[in-house]
Length: 266
Image (cartoon, rainbow, N blue to C red; front, side):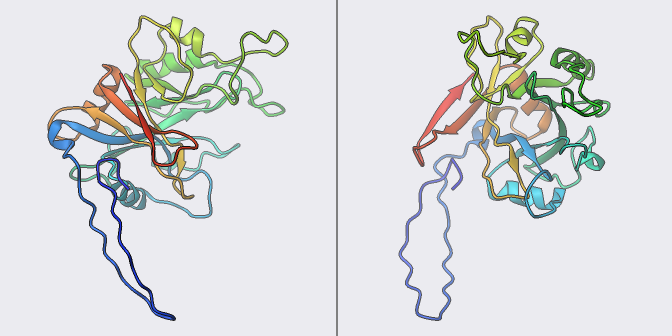
């Protein structure tokens, strides 16, 4: 069910050994695009895990089925491979169309400092793609996230934390090291958006609360939409502007409460 449609209920009787086709037409509660709000998922992996190979055209089909207008395919390494690297481009994918934009962006991997999403890169994919992988040629903890953020900003990119940490840290526990770089990067103004379930931090700098599903579209995982306040025509650059200026709103399904949602508004 798309977030802006009403629930639909129906009773269908299926005879033994028979088939029944029942069409459900969802009733839209409000025309949000008409009010300037466009839905998007800023953290999707087209090919990362799962049993199926996905393509931009099929990913666009999946996104439209989920009522999404903007999708950011974050290209990222899967161990030593980068499955979607051949699709990287700085403009919209040709699978885009009226009312829908598919972009290919980047996720920088390091379980030491935290994972970052790099959107709106205007020049090139940033290498190295990951750091801090023990017992590999990428064992070095450099480049750290601030260095990668600087490289992304040099291209006019937006930077946000998508996995600030593997498990919730407890700074009061002095027996365990805390390596998440997020608090330092907040102080250094190195990031623009934050995944909504991430850490809450007090800062005078305005950040956008953005929602992302980490959906590996070769598996079956649903999106978590962000809604961007943009111009009347759906375009990806106004959506980026909505993030960078704090004009983004996300809906989050609360774990354990099926169907219940809460809003995080910038």
